[in-house]
Image (cartoon, rainbow, N blue to C red):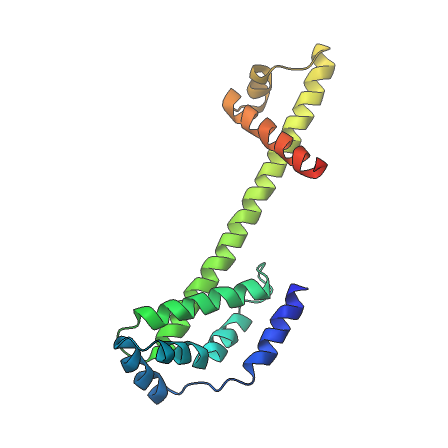
Length: 170
């Protein structure tokens, strides 16, 4: 569904004329004097460049629509923060930085989620093993010792498991 929206967005962009560097510079002067319509045209006229940059970041774990949104926000910030040189070069660099940050953040989130799942599984395994060994459920302290964690860390993992079960149950 989200990819369909992104494709519609790309189709919509076909009708927008891109700015050349001369128009960018003219618009930037107007933007500096507070002209909001010039700012809007500057952003609109550079959207295709931003979307072309998005193409290089597809299939890296972030949805195309999310990448387009990051690119658009970076373009807006570039229009507000630009100082000198080629606006297109400056904007493209800001878009690249935003896209790279989005991809890296997604990767960190996926890694963290995998680590949490591993810990939950280890806790579950340790709990079952200890229940068989002890003939009762292990205490938090016993589980912590077995897993080489602190009691607080074990409690956090248990809370995450309970929270996940509550979400699934809702």
